[in-house]
Length: 279
Image 1 (cartoon, rainbow, N blue to C red):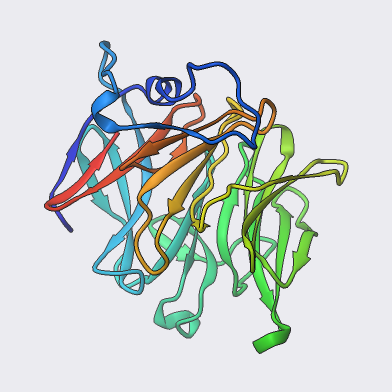
Image 2: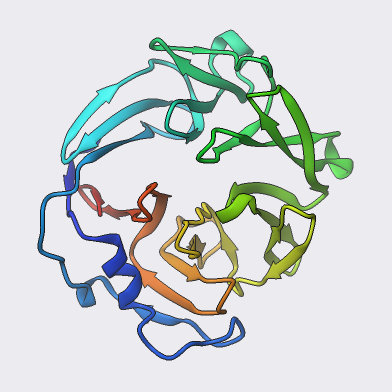
């Protein structure tokens, strides 16, 4: 694992630095904030923990528990983890280890082992995302070749019930938002699009107006943070913030979003030549 160092900044300061100007509707060009323009906030060192995958590449990643400011604990070996989701009492991953035929399968970390999810069982799916009350969003694909369809399903561990939120040939992922809303990513020929699906089935479309986006966590403050790809085939280079309620947009160069904390702070990562920096 590469050497890591930590820059402990208040995430709220990072966001507000790019959004202090007058409100802009979504059609307005975003304001860009550079890392050199950020101001560190004085105060106690942030404390807490999070879970992340790390490895030589996406096909050789394992799960780690990271306790701030700088403690790492390896939790799996040879799990081939692709994505991670969690709530206060549960960690769920999509992993493709030998035991599941090297196919991405949703599994729960329980007592130090990856096991099938209770009431859901083993299922070949991707991108687990858990709400604060531990309801699960998952992404499945149906069919193959030109008839492949992406399907976002919602699973309630309390009842074992599952329901399809949305499906379509361009659907590629989803994330929970405030008040039970679901943020759906579609990769259309014209570029990525986001749909906000309300609890009553209402939809609102957001056009990021960028070549491609990756991780799209949505915090309780209302901001959606998107990893932005400016060049096809190259790693993402910035975070685009969009507030769907106000239309405000801003861009933070050089940093990528990982996840929002329950308190509403955003954990960011910046790739460096000799390691990884977290904020």
